[in-house]
Image (cartoon, rainbow, N blue to C red; front, top):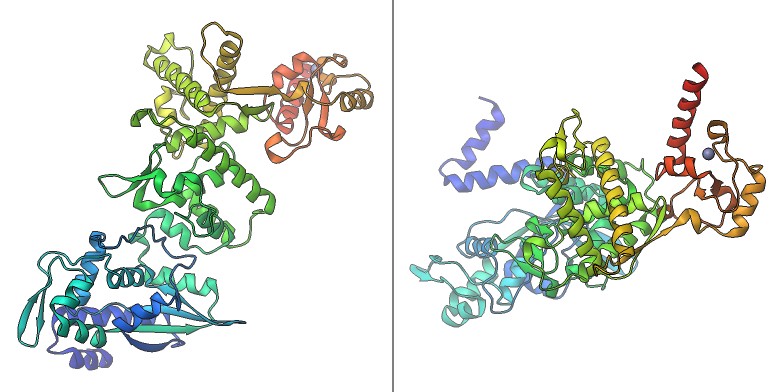
Length: 532
Ligand SMILES: [Zn+2]
């Protein structure tokens, strides 16, 4: 046997198995997270630590950590894991190290909890009577067995004064303390300490420290102290489900393990990458790219992400409280609407005039799509196809917004957007049937300034932008086309460089396609024609 192992075996000989497991666990984590021995150990009693947390000497909520989305209610029971944690501490089981980074600032030092934030908050919650011990909490104390089942801290202090005083002074917590580590170093330690498999996907993404992670985290903060919380995340807009996850009162977005950041990161990703799938794998890669600084995560992209989130928030908040839960907009609905919005905005300005009417319009569109999907293949109005060219119903497309291929999503959304525009044209002109649509589509090609059109006409010699193909001339009544950027990207409609005058044929053929793609299509057509 290895000499070192022999020594270790000798030391732990005769100890109870869970004590041995604790020791091994601690050693492993220490070697893994601090191989060079840069940290030092500090020992503080639990009562003293609770006092220090109450005095806010520690920052428990640091980036890269899991979010603490629990409300600690005075005189409440606390959550199950909190009750169990406190039961194990009060019966004397040892707690894993709490990892601290002491940061020197101009104003003094700050103590950031690298790992142990949830445990620290729980200890604080216990000492402020927000947690009751679970059933069958029995403690051995000076030859007696005390039954602390169902008690909170102040009840323990009243009924078992001696034990309470003894425990808060003698139960010690061990800290491993680093000095002036960077956020990156701390997030690395956090990841090593936390088994990646035990973290939810969004929790794991959040721990990949970068500007993006911080940005998403801030936006998805639950009841944010600085008041930036989206309205949909405020306490009165959320409810607990029976399974312990949370969901909105006015929407069907479920927050598994209360990961609001999962929803937010999808919306942010779609803003930066329109018409893409939002699988966990893709999102994780995005986070890694951001961390490694290879990205284009700019001020401008941040502001369009915020805009989209605000758009969604406003939409959700205009939902009727009488809508049945199964009809409320879900995570997928909101993604699809965002997809459609980005397609429409290539050619139109989308102006929502009444959120609820818009939502109801979308429900009608969905109904048309799902009814059509129930028909036999050759009676269908819409032909959605998967990657293998198999005809599929809308419900499959709808449920594939995360898992589908980008090409598929682009095609499906193209078709749905056409339907969207078609239904809009029918309903918005048919006043008699009294089905309001709640939005306006303002044709951008017709709304370009007269002076810009005039200048473009002159520049193009009164020929269609794709004259080589169509041979048509253009006039002031011809549509103008935004050549470079779509409206969502902040493309200016007044810029002459950004306006192509096109004939009606070319304009309708181009539709919402981007110029760089359409130009290729035209190039091919010309090649084909010339070859004949
Ligand atoms: Zn043309």
